[in-house]
Image (cartoon, rainbow, N blue to C red):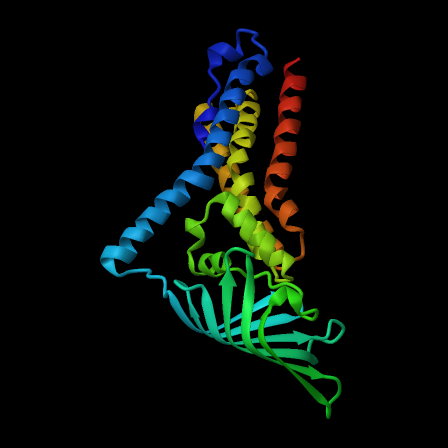
Length: 294
């Protein structure tokens, strides 16, 4: 946060020029910086990180993607759990796959289980095809009904209906968050949320990536409002106040994120809470400075 904005030139301050007139071009410049920061951090930086990790994986044998995953477990929806004995990224296929479906009202009660010799991704239909499937229905503690399928699509099984997990999602789960574009991260979160998974932490991080660049505008308002008030000590005091506001702002972000990660505050509100709070304080201080000047 640029503390130098707080040093308001004394010649301009004493010439009678309106604070708002002086602040307008700086604020417009701040808007451009904010938009550029969102684009830079959301698209350019992830692409650069992806290229960096690609070089490391290809030539330095670091951060390599397994390509072949064993004992892969994932909660596909609120009451669906999928287990891959083995998953081959290249073939987009898994073997020894188990789909377990639990009661909605009692998540500890297993209602259906599908065991498949293999499950392959059909890129034309964009869905999973299960081969050599055994269906088990657990009607009660003592009754288990069996049903066999040679080949069946997941959508044809009423109890399964849809598998939200896709090969691209499996790949993204192995990538580092710094490699995901902002749009890819949003799509990834939406798919996980649709599948009933807990995405609170991911949402807080996603919204924070958008909200944090707007701190530029808050800093501009704070800097102008602080510098327009004449204080003993001159520029040194104003510079020190700006540094203090910066540390308080960053600390406020970390504290609010903790509440957001715990689910005490909505992710969207968590990401914007610091900006909203300090924006209100900056506007109050700006109006107060104008009132006392008049």
